Image (cartoon, rainbow, N blue to C red; front, side, top):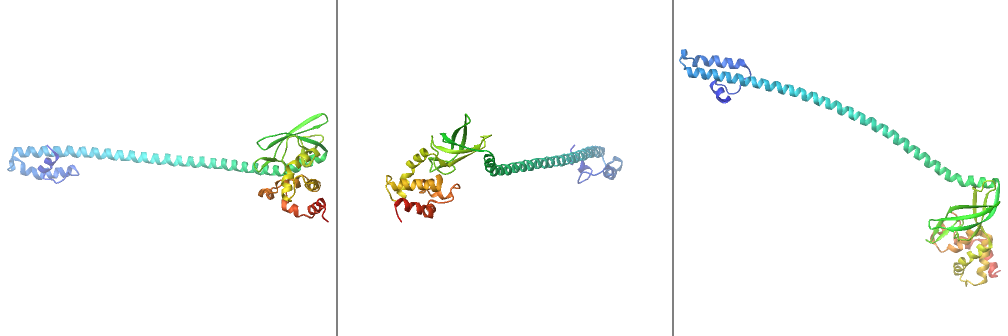
Length: 297
């Protein structure tokens, strides 16, 4: 027997919600189906079988409902547990993020402090070195021992029977000239004055504005061509020699650098030269020595 057949026998449209509804339907139909009331034995037995089937079906439904309720409770409990775990996880992550942010903030602060200290040190170091040099100043002639492709050049000088060497950094001009602080090329064998502390020669200053006559002659071999072109003279003209040595005497090596690199646009942007080549040419001192060299009153 199927549930549809049992419901038909009990004259029910849907599965009853309780055993009471089944009992009411049974009592109502038992009078009609009982043999003593004009029914048949077969109909009465079918009615009993239908009642048993529907009651078993109700029992199964109740069991399923209870299981669903239990499953729903377990699901709710599991969902609540998951929600708590998620909340704890988010809280833990937030705390970890907070700690990481604090560490990152400290790290950034330390880096900024170090950058500031390095910047201050960079600004103060030259002044400190100069102060140390002036405490017990000694001067010697230093020689350029070597120059490198990485903007470095090595100088050496002798003092009290010892030979000192130091590696310095210059800058490249026009892609090929490695120049020192005064702006002229640092040539191997060139000699420049170095000032240092007599007790501690590690504190030193290279005075490449001051050179020996041999180095000055080597510079002249470089400068005479642009110098002659600038004043429309022949490179062998005695006036070129006069102008060169006069500039060297009055303006130093940085003045000679103006003559040598005067044609380069970036010349006026060099920090170690405050005057452009044009300003040097127009200065009263230069005009005076220029007229003197050319014999102009």
